[in-house]
Image (cartoon, rainbow, N blue to C red):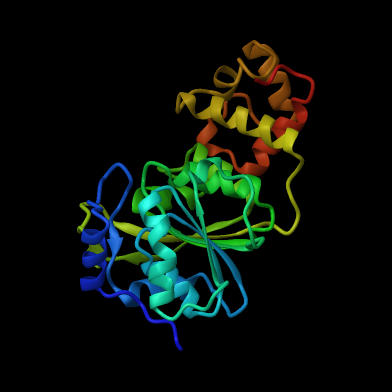
Length: 286
């Protein structure tokens, strides 16, 4: 029996059955268009046999599209009503036993996942999209690629190059794990309810070799946070608190990393920040 997808009428009926009122807080703008969820799965290059983790499956429209492609899915859902209903919906739409595993939990607290997924596919709400992505990349080293649908502002920031207007701390931290790219736009009209913002697809591939160990990552991210805390501030001032305790000490570390102390955080790449963190080993980095 082939896997079938949810239609707009069934999604509304499910929401009514579960007494789910889409809320801005949880980012519950449900996708009601089959072509869109199939597009996400296609862009993510999901293939039969792939092990996919989906965060926030909601009523299951994207979940079923991933399963239709022949992948297995571990779905992490914070809403107990939705987590309990999803396997029932999947079975009714032709999903084989064992293809779907539901984890009823807050994605930001999950540190173990069944099935060892290697692909991340999700529709993430604005308020948790970056924290969830960074949390999963940090905790699940087996995730080697993924595509997520996010608000345009978030996607553009994640994929932004150094020096661009929207480049920020999330851009640098995401780049620690590998390159990111904008992978398509999504019409507002495919959502219920229709949001008042645009959405995009953003994709990543994990770098073949890690940039460093956990200690170096933490040190790098602390420097990134300091550098972007006050935009347009010279690095020697912005990072003084985490690089030796003074502008003079910070300047010495920055120069050792071949970075101008007068540069600004938004002009540096992840490689620059890693060099600073390496040069800062032994300095006061909180």
